[in-house]
Image (cartoon, rainbow, N blue to C red; front, side):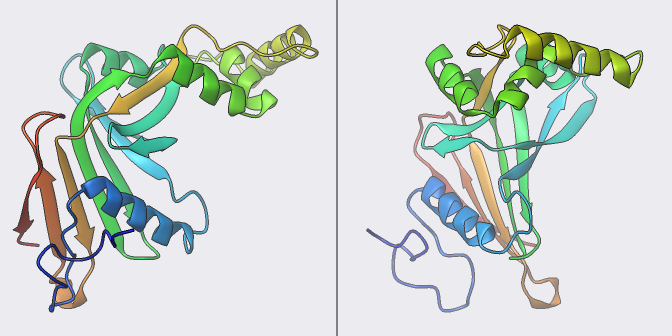
Length: 212
């Protein structure tokens, strides 16, 4: 298989980020590199959205799938981020891998994954996590921890001996990028930045290097 880190016209001679024809190949290569050294989840990413007043909001989630269609994560659609993204389906993502001193920034429109995809991923989760998805009124005020624990106990009893179905308000978002920027630390803050852009999620990519 072709090395996604190789330069189209030959290897770079300055040690910078090599250009790959497909930025998703480069992302997967960087993720695999980070997985070898990151002490916890290498798939952790920041997701930025905006609230109804246009104020930015950001939180950490886990990337659960990536392919040429985009980046997928799952959440409660009745949570703050779920409501914000459904109302304004455009987000920015940020991956920062401190151990390898690399960063990837992503921007693009969002769509809801298919029911089959959501069902398959939900079925792969640990049963305690499945029950938690039913028990948690995510992002809403909680009277006390005991209320949450009571809800967990209720659904644990309900689904203790049966398969846990996916809640109707729980599913996944797919971010179809129109911009992906790769950043790598270099000495004296002369960092390397390579950005891929396209006008729509099905348009061809174009690339350019940015000043650090």
